Length: 176
Image (tube, rainbow, N blue to C red; front, side, top):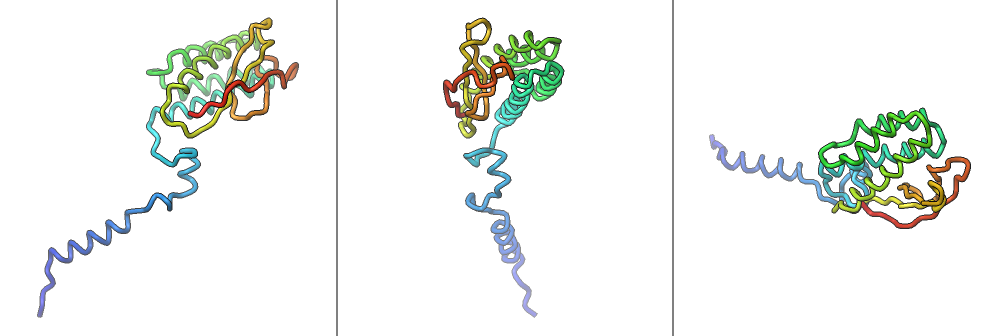
C-alpha cells in the first residue's frame, strides 16, 4: 500500500486554510465600512476614542439646543465616560465643568471652550474619513460670537436653543 507523503498533505491543508482566510478588500462587509466611515481602513484606538467623544459631544450639543440643563448635565457625564484623558485634557476639563454646572448659561459658556478644544483635536487628526460642520453664531455671548460643531449642515444653535434656533452659519467643513 502506498503511503501519502506527510509533508505534501500538510502543505495542501495549509494552502486550503490560507485561501479560506484571505478575503479581498472588495468583499468587506457593509458593517465594517459603516464603523470606519468612508475609508474602510483599520482605525487606531485613539481614532475610535475621538469618534466616541465626537458622538457624545453631538448628543450634548442637542441637549443644549433643547435648552435642558438636566439633559445637558447627563450628556456631559456620558461624554466623560469615553474621554481619553491622555490627549484630551482640555476637552475633559470643559466636559467636567458642564457636568457640574446647574444652569444653562454656565453650561453654554463651557460648551464654547469645549467646542474650541475639540475642534483643535479634530484638526490634528490624520484619518480624514468623517465629516463635521464648524458653525458660528455671531450673536452668542453679547455679540462676541461662538462656534460649535455639528454633523448636519442645518443650523441648530446650542447657544440660544429655541429662542434663536436657526441663528448662525456654516463656517467650515471638517474632515476627520
